Amino acid sequence: MTITDIRNLLVIGIDTVFVAASAKNAGYNVYAVDYFDDVDLQQACAAYETIKKQRNTESHMKVKINFNPRTLLKMAKTMSKKHRINAVLLSSGLDDYTDILCNLNETVPILGNSPDIIRSIRERKKFFNALEKMGVPHPETAVVENLFEAKEAAANMGYPVVVKPSKGFGGVGVRLASNPLELEKVFQIAKIDGDVVVQKLIRGIHASMSILAGKRSIQVLSINEQLLGLPSVYQKEPFGYCGNIVPLQVTSPIFEKCRLIAEKIALHFGLKGSNGIDIVISKDGTPYVVEVNPRFQGSLGCIEKVLELNLVNAHVKACLYNELPATKPPSKFCTRLVLYAPNRVIAPDLTTLRGIWNIPPPHSIIEKGEPICSVLTEGGSRKTSLRKAESLAKIIYSKLQSA
Image 1: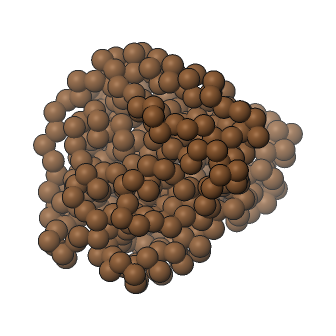
Image 2 (image 1 turned 45 degrees about the horizontal axis):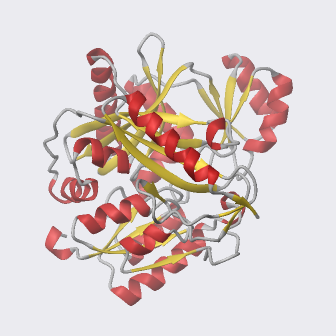
C-alpha cells in the first residue's frame, strides 16, 4: 500500500473527532464510526454512523452501559462496503477487543498496529513481564481473577494499590485502595468485564508520551501532562480522563529516560505510527510505564497545535515509509479540558463558541457524569493556557439547564 492508494479513511472509536478533523485537513475523504453524534464530527466527515443519535430532547445515555464494540464493527463493515474504504484509523475504545479488531482488519486494513501487536500490548501479564525483561521501570503489577487473589497481591506488594479493570478506557472503574477493607469495596467496581489489575501506587506526575514509530526508529513528539479526576469539571471517576496539557516540561535527563523507554517498547513490540505510553514520573525523576495505548490519543488536538504538525499525515508516512517528521521545540502550550455534566442537563448551542470540540447537538440530553464537550485553548505558558480553558468551561457551565 502507498499513500496514493489511500483516499478514503475510516476512523473508528469513542472519541474520533480530533482524528477525523486531522485526516480531513490532510486531504483525505473521511468517514467515521463513533459512539457520540457530535456536531463537529458531522462537519469533518463525508459520512458517519454513531451508536447513539443525539436528537432534540433525546439522551445519549451512559457510555459505560451502552457502548458496544460489536455495534461499531457492524457499522464499520456497512460503511466500508458503501464507500470503498481504503484503510482504518483507530481511536480509543477498541484496544482490549482484539477479536473485533481482527474482524475489522479482515474487512479493511488497519493502518497502524496489527491486532496481534495490539493484543501483545494489552495482555497485561505478558506486557509487564516483557517490561521486566527489558529493564523498563513499571509499577509492581498483578492480574487477578478474584478478591482473594487481589488481597494476596496487595499484601505482597504493599498498600496503597491501584485497582483497575483489565478492559476499559478513560479511567472508568479505576480506584485506590489503602487497606484490605477498601480493597473489598473497590474490587467489585473494577471487575467490570474479566480479570482485575492490581498495581502498586506510584506517587508522582501523571503523564503520557506521544510517539511516532517507524520500522527501526522512533520519535517522542511530546510528553504530555494528564488531567485526571478533576472535580472542577465534574469528573466523578477519581482517575477519570479530563484532558491534557501539552507539553509537560521536564528536564533533559528525564526526557532522555522517556526516549529510551519509548524506543525499547516500540522496537520490542514492533509498534507502528502514532502511539501513546502512559507514565507516572516519580519524585526522583523515574518514568514508570503504566500502559501503552497502541493508537491515536486524546492529546492529538493539543499536539497538532503545539508542534504545528498534522498527526494523521505523519502517522501515514511513518506506517508506510518509516518516515518521521522534523519538529521544532514547542513555543506555546495547549490545554484540552473535557467537561462533564454536573447533573442531567440539556445541551446548549455551543456551535458559536470558538475552541469547542466534541460539540453535542443543541437541545440533546446529557446524563449526569457524561461528557458534554471539550475545550482547546492555547497560551504562552501552562498557566495561561489552563486559565483560558477554565474560563471557557465556566461560560459553558453557565449555559446548562437541568433536563
